[in-house]
Length: 129
Ligand SMILES: [Mg+2]
Image 1 (cartoon, rainbow, N blue to C red):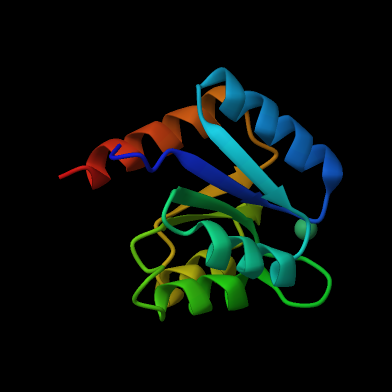
Image 2: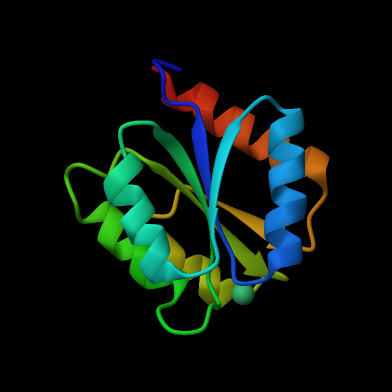
């Protein structure tokens, strides 16, 4: 993946971050994590050259995941980074809004590790060409 193998996990729930990180490490991904949107954007600024994908929670205190998604997809330097939104259940509104803002995929919480890895691996594979 041309040196881009880092996944940024952004979620305000530490349990989700820890669990997700564990699964991704099993899939041989490098991970960096953040529990809020503001810090996540700082991490993107500092690491965008190696971030392949962001797993992004929507509902967070302060700035939401939508605002992060919007900022990523409107910035030429960042827009190639894949963004996968974490949504609670299948809130159709979330999906519609996320689509409009340029989300690449969704993972519904609660999720299985298998499903998470599969979604990510498929996305990265498609994105190679
Ligand atoms: Mg949340």
